[in-house]
Amino acid sequence: MNALDPVARLRVLAAGLRAPMYAERRIGLPFEQVWAVIADLEGELPHLVSFVREFRVAAGDSERKEARAVDVLGLRGPFEVRLGPGWCLMQSRLVTMGMAAVPDDGGTRLAVCGAMRPAALGPVQRTYRRLLGERRTRAFFREVERRAALR
Image (cartoon, rainbow, N blue to C red; front, side, top):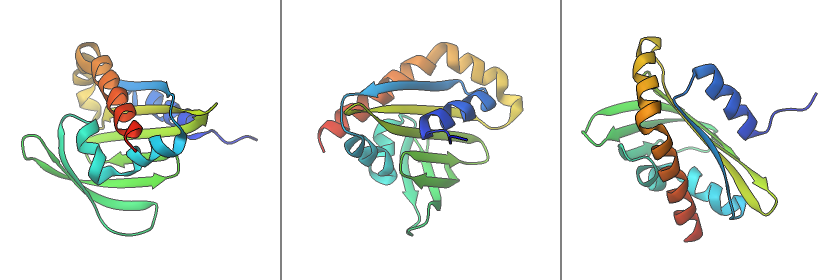
């Protein structure tokens, strides 16, 4: 049996979460450059996600880490992070966000997913998808590509 690659795995997760934000794009830069941006959560996440002002990850070498996010309003929240080659999943009690990438013929196939965790927030997620989801994902990919090109 073949294992799912990270992008396919994130696609399955997004479907299960009924994520209001999920998109995939091919970026014409090498995987190593693109993933260097994604994996630098402290340095890059505030540039990639407009509502994140700060993201601090506890030191350590393991794939499972604790982190603390500060949003643009100053609200703080703990996150559990799983970070490995081509895979990043961040979860708080309210939010799940994932990013995945695989090499793609000299470029990179990149996916991003975002969802609210409480089921009661389903109507909010559907509204968000209609109003902002596509615009936010386009901005995310544009900024990843811009920042990766600088590396």
